[in-house]
Amino acid sequence: MTRLPDDLDPELVERLVTTRGGALAQKMEIDFVELSAERSLARMPVAGNTQVIGLLHGGAHVVLGESLGSISSAIHAGPGRYAVGIEINATHSRSVTEGMVTGTCTALVLGRTLCTHEIVITDDEGRRLSTVRMTNLLRDR
Image 1 (cartoon, rainbow, N blue to C red):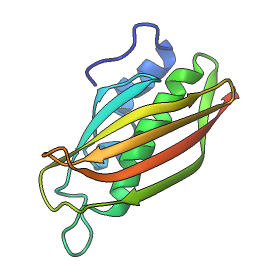
Image 2 (cartoon, helix red, strand yellow; image 1 turned 60 degrees about the horizontal axis):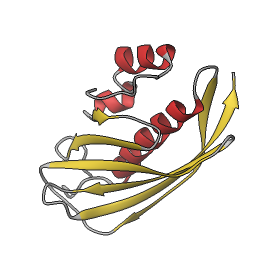
Image 3 (spheres, helix red, strand yellow; image 1 turned 30 degrees about the vertical axis):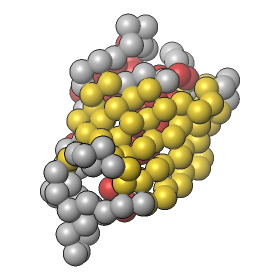
Image 4 (cartoon, rainbow, N blue to C red; image 1 turned 135 degrees about the horizontal axis):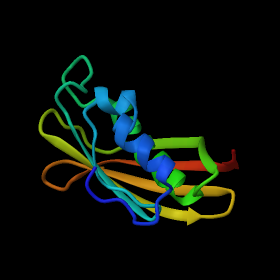
């Protein structure tokens, strides 16, 4: 992970650093480049994340999107709180068979109890592959 907000909950930083975003993110080789509540960015290889005919798996798009939306919501939640995903959807507009994909997560709503993020996934040429929208419920520990 490259860039984190200065005021981030130390416990969350510890979890992000030690798990590199969690076991699934590690298996899919997701590289978190920038993380904040308002905007986050991560990259993921197509290789190793394809379905039977060689296209990037639709579920891989969703995993990348959910990883970004969940972490961004957890950052917004702050110390003593956590984020729980309550809704996610994806629209796939284009396929890809090689290279890297980039997920750019932008906050739509950063509320006291709910966060909604839009995650746009693009290929190496910047073409939109899919749009993921995720809503998280913020809860006290």
